[in-house]
Image 1 (cartoon, one colour):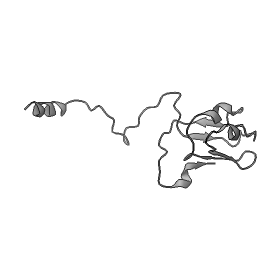
Image 2 (cartoon, helix red, strand yellow):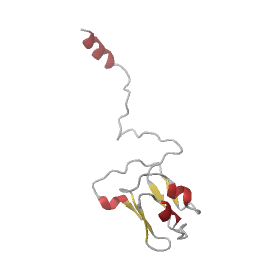
Image 3 (cartoon, one colour):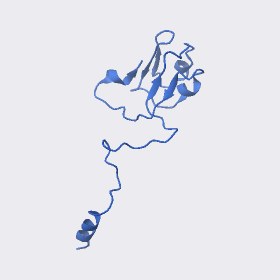
Image 4 (cartoon, one colour):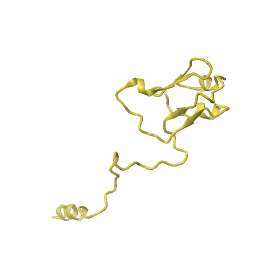
Length: 106
């Protein structure tokens, strides 16, 4: 009997969770989302390539880097090491997908 009363009481309460795809979850200021690469700022120093522990960054020439988000563990060392801030974080956390080519940032 008490379960029935509890179920009826929950019908009129505000839900504890968000309705995710329709209601976006707000992120905080220092959130580490998807990597954003600004090739126009890149000076080709290769510091990010040297410091990446998962080898997720490949150097393709001055101002041409590739970031493999499948291998990236979001440690932030590349963002902290870049002297000209050519690598930054976005607040986008929706990185899942069915196409692997979309997980390479150029």
